[in-house]
Image (cartoon, rainbow, N blue to C red; front, side, top):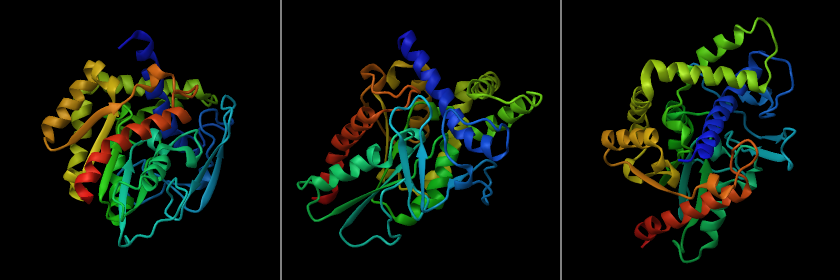
Length: 323
């Protein structure tokens, strides 16, 4: 991995922490300044949820959010459906006959930060599947997006248990943005809050708050090592696979993942622990293609690229299932 790509990846990892922590940042009143990373209204976030995960949060249903930090040229409009999912449509819990249902999991790359809901790769995938008459011709496809920014393995597993399994999906697609191997919100958030509280009442800007996340990340890496953090995160797959069929779950990642020794070792640890896990590193390198917004998240072309790769991959799975 080139030095430039490493820097970009580091920026994205930091921003993932910022986005995940921003909800708590506003909720607990750590600063009164206008947010410069994500402009989501804390009134639309449900934090006090009965969960063993201390910082678990979800989005309130039936709400439209407008998001446009100063650097973002085009306003992002998120529509949350009646189940608090970043979706264009409401989906009935009971799956109708003739419906093939896919659940998508992940962090902000799956949620679609700074991209209006209709341009997110999950929505594009749903349209592509329904427009492909040669795939499962007697089926209607539903692609239901459970992604939320900043979520790690434990939070994704919790969200699937709470929101995903009730939809009885035929396929689960988990998109790994690269930073999720080591991100651990339960361990890092307390360190971030301590860092923020030690600011002696000084209002934190985006970079100062991001530095708190970076320091927390470095402290955890020094304490546990990347291998240790990967092992901790892997434990939560036990919970996930109690609720999701491993044979109906496909993990996707970037091709560039293989260029990083740390990420490759973390992936190998997962595959050794869960030998039936299907992990496809086939998403084109959007860093190399420059399909990025200024903050490092995928732009519209990036989401198209992710959609195309996943669609071409699962076509073969659908052929086996439907015929």
